[in-house]
Length: 111
Image (cartoon, rainbow, N blue to C red; front, side):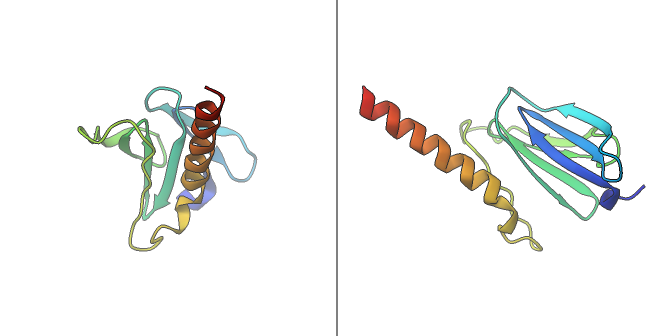
């Protein structure tokens, strides 16, 4: 199996790998909380950010290769940029940020 045989989904604090051919779940790894998960796959590595932390996962097992809590930076959304994607894969995180900002503005206006 190759990473191109899998589809990686970030959802509610977890990363899920699906078989691209049939949609069957290969593995699921809970990261932290139930927050939005930003996922980038490159060069045989799955990087995921969630709840202000970053995780490096094995693409075939979902096991953590390493984890960095990014202490001192808070619990906000984190985007991931690498040389080959140069931020182009951050659109889902940017949309989530806009959604959160709009919800905060609406809550402030109604208070």
